[in-house]
Image (tube, rainbow, N blue to C red; front, side, top):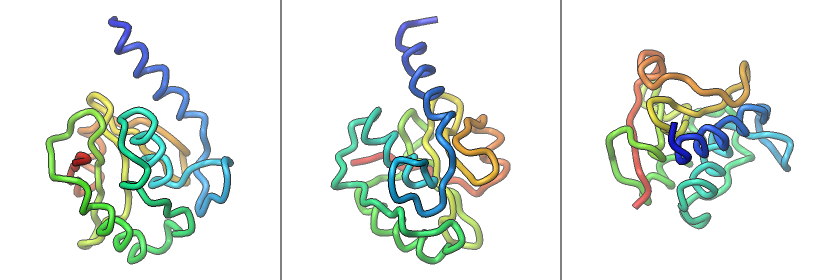
Amino acid sequence: MSDAHNQVNNWVDAYRFIPYVDRPEGNEGFNCWGMVRDVLMTHFNVPAEALPAYGSISSNEPALIDAGYRTVKQSFTPAAPVDGAVACCYHRGLMTHIGVVVGDNILHTGSKKGVCVDARARFERLFDVQYYVYG
């Protein structure tokens, strides 16, 4: 295994211990957008100004999640599912969940498991997914 592959596995594994927190106010955990925002800024060099904080939006507010997504989407372009691409999940026309592509997997977080990694193929069976990259 290459050093680059091991480095990716190390930072992905570090996220797995972070709990899901709806409407996080500090460093106690992430909602799905907060985790994606942190991963993109820390590991994929996306500037903070392209990724507004939406910690006050609850996972039970799909219309507000979708409105936030539509604002952020202006800085992103549709793409293939490459490393660092954002995996946007839709339900009934609204974007309701989000994760990040890492290899053949999606790193995301939710109330049942916290931060987790799912195979992209499984993720795509569960959600209507579209991918975007910054720029």
